[in-house]
Length: 310
Image (cartoon, rainbow, N blue to C red; front, side, top):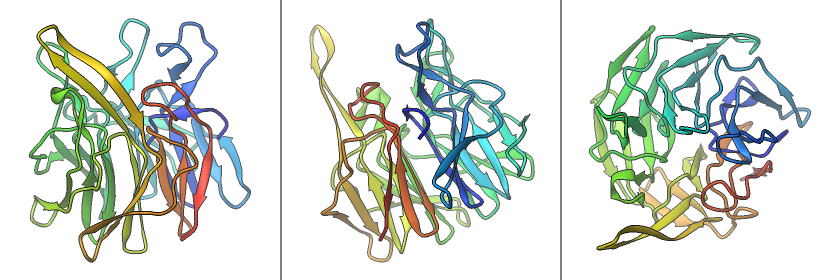
């Protein structure tokens, strides 16, 4: 990739891959995350030439911006604005690009500010599910809120039974799958939970859990399977003095979920390095895995792209 980036939600758009609204490597001494900053940059990868180029910039800088392709349009949803005083300003804005990716404009905002959600395009609708929002005191909290965008309006879908953030998603046979994530209210405890949403019944169904709980992972669906890549974990110690972070780690593991048998498998192949905050996109029946950071948090942000041929 042109820059090292993490906390990305890339998507296929036409025969290209788009990334926007990342935490991107920055030389700005006032960057909110030290060496990382939110960005207006839009990066477009052409697999036929193996070349990246720039698209029209976003109207506002974001990180953790959700990207979704729906009805031949590219949508940028929610995410965080950031400055040195507050690098986690959750937003409700929604931007849409024209088909040529030369111009963005703002459309109907999410009903609530939302970021670190899952994003899915299914049957001409956009789903935004879970993540983080703010409470009445402007404090960040997890949410199970589920919004569906159709014909210019947001309506409510069945919410998650357990609010969570930093999960991953995929779609298959008219269902939306949510995989993993973590609970901010439980000291960022990772979840192995897997569920699918049926829009015809407006309900969630429980499925076989992941072999290992993971958050900040990426997923992609190919050949009757969902592949899950990497992620991170934080471990806290509780005592009378309070809560203390004692360890963190990230994963290089690749798992696959068999959509026909509701079973998980830990694959024998791994990512080239541990990675979280990465993205995974299917293009031309191949999975492209990109970006993220080697270490939990902001250290070791990568510009790598690997291609998985199955």
